Image (cartoon, rainbow, N blue to C red):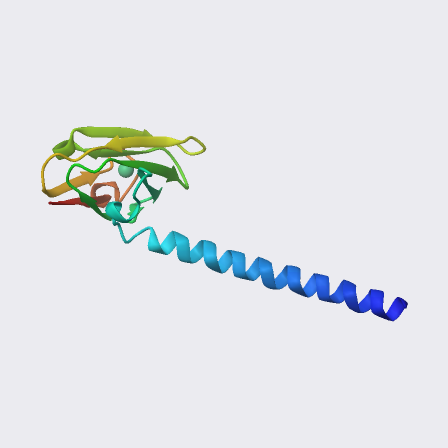
Length: 136
Ligand SMILES: [Cu+2]
């Protein structure tokens, strides 16, 4: 009797560990697929693109959008306050650690739009940039 209980307990622990690993793996895959931007695939829901920011880069730093399709960019800073400035699309925001920093964009014109950090954040700040590619 106690043997069975013991075995059951071990099985519960093992399945919990396996589930935890699977969950982490799936979460990671989901995060990766988010770098492949396809707003059209997300019908019915407005697309959200998560961008992680730290000295001196944005991840992802290449973002593909569809002309006329709304997206919300959600920025998370891992270290300090940065900026996101994309003059070609007429948007900017501060990116403050511990805060939800969001920008909604509905790109009206196809093209390539550079963005960069406009809050000085140290040596390397000048190279902190990326690109939004808007496709027809
Ligand atoms: Cu900076």
